[in-house]
Length: 334
Image (cartoon, rainbow, N blue to C red; front, side):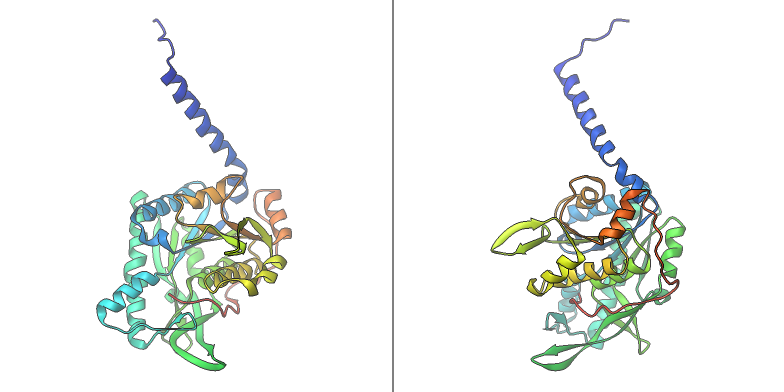
């Protein structure tokens, strides 16, 4: 048999294959460190409404699952809620950056988050296998919330069926993870009066990450990350610790502040790393988890991170079992 001489095209294909192999090897230490660890992903922004990005997001979540990580998705659905409220002729107003949620509006919020958005995410993920299981925060009382009162012009103001998370019971989510499933949780919480509340999805994701002892919290947004002095300074802050973030919080915009506060609460609660990444970049989730360079802004607890990176990601830390009580009273709702 006479061997065919190699051609420039063959050489290009070999170079491309070697480049792919190099990228796979780059992921090896991260695969080792996070194998078997829970990663909570808050899904929102343009990645949720752009069809192409929605498909890429589902692929990334399934990739994490096949790579041995344990992804959990928490989502809101502000644009979808607004569209449905308009269609139903239900007035939607905002106070102090929060959606005023009447009983009538809450019915729409619950229907959209749990009956529409949640099902769409599940459908996209399950195109790749029987992985995703949908639920809301009210299922099995995973999220329990208290009524949120806001200050407007120095006065306490009731904004309806809007809650702040007071307790998390992760048992049902943990059971799904143990069964090899991908839980997809909508940000509706059980209320202290027996009904339900609309809660901020960033806060819900942070609270759940703490309760699940997650290795990472990742929040998809419509910005590249955190800037030191935006818009005067557009240099991205790629990494900061909890002390540095706490000093920056008073200077942040109303849009970024709740997300960074959620990251801070997560890391202070025992999650080694919390990230803000640009969901407009296809597969940004994989770039953050599996590459040396990463993407976006990462908040860390340096002691926990050192323990995480020293071995396979399993570290000892005292934590009470069962339901977890927290105080997350910030951020806007859908």
